[in-house]
Length: 169
Image 1: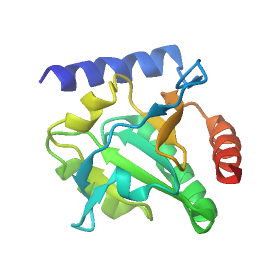
Image 2 (image 1 turned 60 degrees about the vertical axis):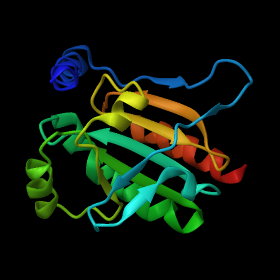
Image 3 (image 1 turned 180 degrees about the horizontal axis):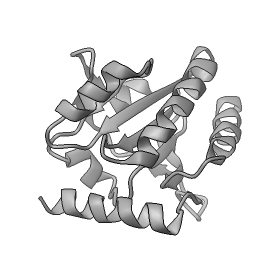
């Protein structure tokens, strides 16, 4: 209940403050390993982050009640389709305790990347997610390299630059 209230308040602040800033996950030169997790996907199979080593991975935390999240999803899908053949993957993590609304919404749109369900908020807590959406970009070695809080139109340019740079490493 606390996390749902926190996410709802964060979503409100995200809308009212227009957050969409990008912050480097680590201001030092030391890499920050992405916490590992395993979640069930919309295909029914379990996906484990550490099994995706060798790929650049974007992890997007979202909810069906979050308008900026829904606005961002088609853009994320375009990025996924463009860069997936080059060693990029995207995981959409739905944070709702009851994923029925998310499942209904996903039936209306064409999303090609895996959607995972964090119904117990264990992964969102592991990553200290407090704003919807939150997007984390992980390098091929499994280190968090970029964190984006919220969504504003145009942030996809930063996503693209960061993905391309990490794919070249």
